[in-house]
Length: 308
Ligand code: CP
Image 1 (cartoon, rainbow, N blue to C red):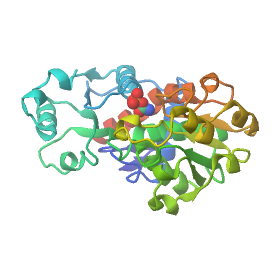
Image 2 (image 1 turned 60 degrees about the vertical axis):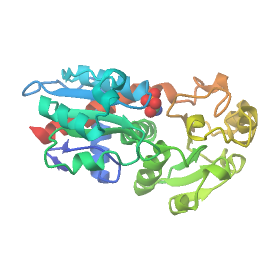
Image 3 (image 1 turned 135 degrees about the vertical axis):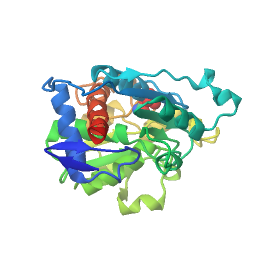
Image 4 (image 1 turned 180 degrees about the vertical axis):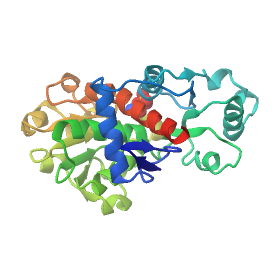
């Protein structure tokens, strides 16, 4: 990974740790240039991408697709439900095949944490890997779009009070964000049920009740309650979660005028956030989805820079 003439070059993007602060800022600024329509796309040859989603997705899958189309890339369709995965083909063999076919970039979402290690360590696989989410591991493109949204709002990360609230243990978004935001100078707090918090996160920030911090926060990052990862063991109802830990209208009114509310979505309305607040003036949830296309264009371009 390098920056040459202001351009970020990447071989893969699998975690946030592999990016320097300079590379993170480079990708954010490039995403903003794409958003402002300041970039002319002139690929030196036709490049091909394939989006392989072994877990469900709307935003990540479709915004990578949109980013690939905007970059004039060819897309190789892949649907795990009708592929040779059903005949026992392993992930390694699927990606080995994509590489042999000449696919330049594989965007992969998979339930196995660190699934990408065997792929990027392979001497045979030439295709670049972009991690679209590995179980409860990491979600770097979501993290970059979150960072772009914060940077667009405040122009800095230094000194911002950021609360990451909710299902932290099961959230790959939280894990990517807590590390990089602290490294970029933000002050991190965690909120939500104690049972979804682990002491391993103490190195990044302290756990507080949402009512202790709501008036001071600059960025309130709500997380989706990941019902699918709880095996049906939740000790409170959706309504109880909302009143104890969620963003209610009463808490929204206590936020500073300059505070923003984020959520990676999909949103459980009336659980993490009241239905009426999803598109409220301080909410940036729709903007996050818009920014996702532009920062993903920046990620894909950085990988193509690495190949050029
Ligand atoms: N935020 C996010 O990853 O959404 P999807 O699961 O719809 O991709």
